[in-house]
Image (cartoon, rainbow, N blue to C red):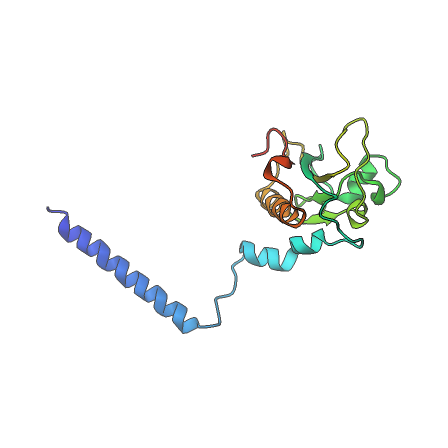
Length: 184
């Protein structure tokens, strides 16, 4: 029972600190403190477009057209739509064979979602020597190789938000979403 004075002191200190914190917040009212240097929310608000904006397209979107989502690695350590097209020997960025690219800070903002021309026109991906998927598959390319260049926390978070929004908008089931085998 010799711990009772210590417990009382800890509880009193907790009560005082919580009261002081509440008073500071009430004094600030509708003027919250400015975001710190590493504020994730201010980074998203000022540097990254919303997922809803990335999902918009110039062509009408039909809920029955899309039924699967596949996330895959670019196989590169850096890049964006234009750089991936160039590395792939494509004539232009319009020819890239995915719907979205999620950048890692090396070629685009960390977590930046770039929608491709195929998404803007609501076109299916073309089957080729490296992919034989369905015409109902939305493909998301994450800039990483999955070995030495793994996805950043921002890329993972933005991918999750993008997938959730696509699933909600097009009625895609959870078991129809495919991630790379070493997705963390």
